[in-house]
Length: 314
Ligand code: A2P
Image (cartoon, rainbow, N blue to C red; front, side):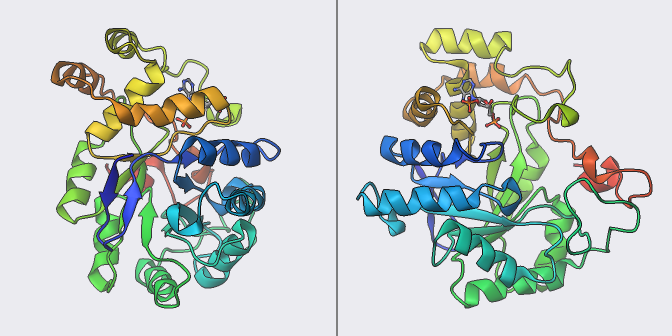
């Protein structure tokens, strides 16, 4: 497996297992199967409500000698109602994941709501102004205390990263963003590169298993795209492998979610071949500015966020 060297001198496997939407009851088995198949990077978050089951699967896998703690890279993310209690939120994730430290802790969204406000139950009075430097200082203190070896952000624009950099003593190591051939984020990726911040691509396969309430019926399918499938046929691989290999060849970390043993295996194998320059060009030409996760759920009536504000023109 190829690795990227992060700006904190840690190496991260370029392909990891995504656990967003992996259901309790399925996710533990998926993690066990993934580790047995050779995955060494697991992407988690408190808001996925499955970290406890992942924790048990990690412990079982360590006990069975499938891998050691130090061989794997585990990420978790700070949810938006915990911005002023970063350490206790991280410690809760550690407890659930049955770990002593994380490899990466990310601020999940540049959105701040009052403590205890549940997902989607926010109204105009739920939102608080962001204080990027204060939250970042708390993230840094978690590194200093050894709770995580790295820190970063997710869904951040270059402008918001600039806000953090004004006062940061530790630079974000990663910006995790939606990225795939329909939404390539060239400017943001270039900006992150210029700052030595690695990019992790989420929804690399189009996240077709999103909840119907946040999904348009007629959204374009990456996996059924004609060009993607023609490239797959030429390379005798699957459409999913084409989409993952495209990320890797662009130097982006990626975290496809699967709870299916066959697809877990084929996704991991996507790191083992190369697409030609011409295949890459054809895939690059698929850009259409289409977001699967447009985060309209943060923009109810009265919310200070609109999609323009949230995405900051990126
Ligand atoms: P499953 O978990 O049953 O494998 P994303 O990573 O973009 O969020 O996409 C995840 C979705 O894509 C899930 O529905 C997952 O289903 C499916 N999926 C994962 N790997 C593949 C693959 N190689 N080919 C087709 N679908 C896949």
